[in-house]
Image 1 (tube, rainbow, N blue to C red):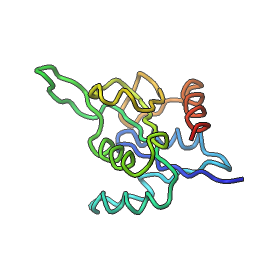
Image 2 (cartoon, one colour):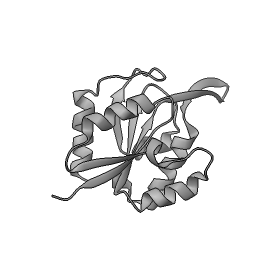
Image 3 (cartoon, rainbow, N blue to C red):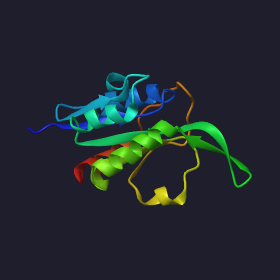
Length: 148
């Protein structure tokens, strides 16, 4: 059977949740190349992403509230900017159907992100915390993967 390999990206604060997702979803036909195994702090991220691109079939990026920003005089939680950068890189490298955004927590993104593939993780998020991967998350991920 063919094996699909996906890049798993997240912030450092969401690494524990990303690990739980990988442990839950990995199978004999689905492997993950995780950022903590292939991105070296201090190296040029773009060079590392170009190397990763040649080894994977697509990407799952875990978005979570990371920092606070002021948008139109309103304080908002926003996701990690490196994760947004990784999303943009892989969106340009792969077809849109090969990229999924896994959402944990509540945060602001521009409405332009509404048309991309979202997989709902949980409304709750705690830095360094781990939640069980829900049946809804498994189901949405399975549907996305089936159309991969």
